[in-house]
Amino acid sequence: MAAPAKDLAPTRPYIRNLRWWIGGLLFASTVINYIDRQTLSYLSPFLIPKYHWTHTDYAHILISFRIAYALGQTPAGRIIDRVGTRRGLSISVLFYSLVSMTTSLASGFRSFAGFRFFLGLGESFNWPGAAKAVSEWFPKRERGRAAALFDSGSSIGGAIAPYIVVPIYYRWGWQPAFVIPGLLGFIWLHVWRRSYYPPAEHPRISPAERDMILSDAAETQTPSEKGRWSALLKLPQTWGAIAAKTLTDPVWFFIADWFPLYLLAKGIPPKTGFFAFWVPFVGADLGNFFGGWASDYLIKRGWSLGAARKAVVVFGGIGVMLLIPTIFTSNLVTIAALFGLATFCYAAFSTIANVLPSDLYTGGSVASVFGFSGTGAGLGTIIAFELIGYFADAGKALPGQTFDKIVVVAGLIPLVGMFLVLLLVRNTRATKEGLVRPV
Image 1 (cartoon, rainbow, N blue to C red):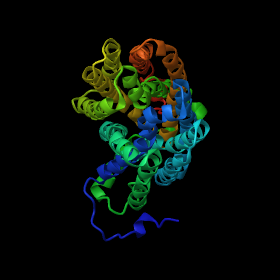
Image 2: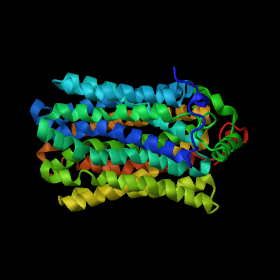
Image 3: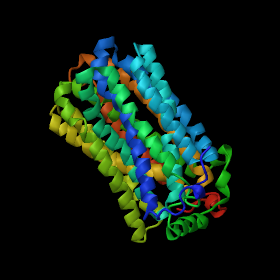
């Protein structure tokens, strides 16, 4: 059992802006999460021919991850609300790091699918836990940037993963490419256990910063502090938060998990396309920060919280349509540029989707609502991947056009999510009754 925070070196100096160091830890967790997750994607051009998988087989392996990820996020949110952010994320990172390493023991379709299932189960805690940490440590005027910081870890992790995974594959084979990235989680876990406590208990937070965080939390307390699931699901704002992720995340996961195979279908081999793998992830990383900065800037300029968030949602929903023109070209630079711009817009939208639960609800419900959103996104991704595998195999007879229909749909789905957020995330009678924070 960990010692109480107050007993841990009380004479050590305060850390200036400690909340942003906490944000950095959440960012690092997400980077490691995505390196472990993307390992299979970057090895897919080599593993698919080795094990004679079809696109449908590969889709089913990915879906096994998504089933666990989708089913895990809602109870993960509730568990984190009960056991706390520190313990919940510790268990998560320990579990999925072990699973990532033991994936090196896989020997075929079923074992890969099994390991991916357990990886998804472990990783399902990351975003609900990070969202709760943001709600605990950041005042509302900074939550957009804080959410952008931790969410950008997915882009950075995805961008650097090929430069870790592919060289390891060429030098030592595919098994070490799973083991070595898995070790990173243990380093993070050591730092996290020594560093994370709630603001009211942290031994190295300055009194001024603690008072600022706690006073903001006190101003926004609502009766939904320990909201029941049934009560939360009756609120349109909850469904707006669910729609924001359900209709955007599947597009991101398509890009993250299928981009190397999309380039291959365009006639671009892995050794050539390797140099473009990072582009969608860097675009997304910049989009994360743009979305958080833009909405927080608009709030400082006097916009209401809801108007500032929705402005970024509109930008993102329209911008993802830049995926569609890629069906008309096989030029690597053009494809990479359009994917990078589209993921920039997606990530701006995604940042708002990640911060909506903490905008709308208080601590006792944030992770639960985020869990609902994650489950919705997971279920949407499962359906999407099943269709992607089917249509990709059906389109093999059309060289260069294997993924065309898929890309068109991917460019349009976030537009639907945009309209639902505009419709559902608004002040209602529940706001007047204090069940939901005003936007």
